[in-house]
Length: 143
Figure 1 (cartoon, rainbow, N blue to C red):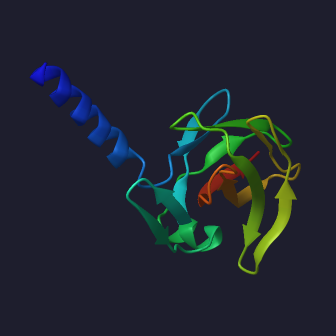
Figure 2 (figure 1 turned 30 degrees about the horizontal axis):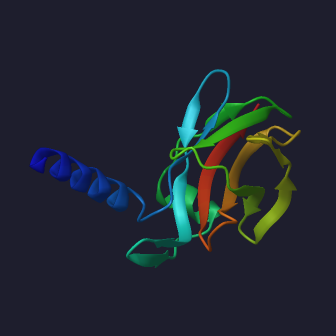
């Protein structure tokens, strides 16, 4: 019985530790995938909360020297969260002035721009059953 209690306590601690920040976000085309860079977020979890501030997407791609995810013009790219959650998602193209164009999001997909170019994209996720919110940055090369 002591082994069972120890195993349950260990599992509980692992799950608790895993919930102290937003999950990874991955965008995927038919050919490749990229994990977004976590930026600003507000995250509550059992035992506490964290607020973190990061640079906007246009600065993040420069600071982090991000690799671009290649897509076709107008392609829909799928996205998934590492914990399997399904928050509300908004995606926007960014320039130095801030967000310049909203991208369509629907059922785990983001509509890429029609014009070729190298784009910083900010993806904001809101978990409606909590006050949790996170922003992720991707660099996308639309061919």
